[in-house]
Length: 89
Length: 84
Image (cartoon, rainbow over all chains, first blue to last red; front, side, top):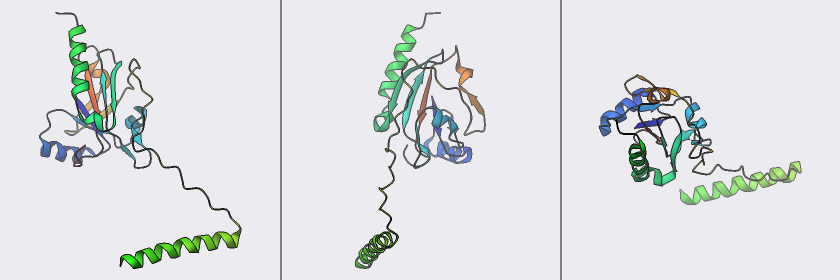
C-alpha cells in the first residue's frame, strides 16, 4: 500500500504521525505522477482521490476514482484474487 | 454588510456590461471549469506509469522495486490533513 499526494514530505511526515499510518506516504510535489496517472485536478492543482491496484508485472488490475475510492473493498478484493492466482511456493 | 455586498456585485456586473457596450466587445462565455473528478485515461490491463518519489521518511520509493515481488495498491489522496 502506497499513499500519494502533492504534499511535501515534511507535511506527509506530520500527517503520517497524526493518523498513525503504517505505509509510505509519497510526495508528488511536481504533480508529474498525478498527471501521468490522469488524476490531477488541473484547476485546483491537487490529485483527486483514486486507487489503482498494480500487479507484480506492473499491470493495472483495478481502478477506482472519486468518493468510492475511499472505500478499500474493491482494491482488497482484487488483491485477494491476485494472491489466489499466484502459484503456491 | 450583506446588502452592501449584493449592491457591490450588481454594480460590478453593470460596470462590466457598460464597459462592453462602450468597447463594442461581446461578453465572453465563462471559462470552462474542469470537472471535480478528473477521469483517468488508464484502464485495467494498461502498464502502470513508472515513478520514483520520496516518502514521508525521505526514503525513495520506486514502482519498479515491487516488480516480481509484491502487488501494489496506489492510493491518491487529495491533501494531508483533509480526510483524504
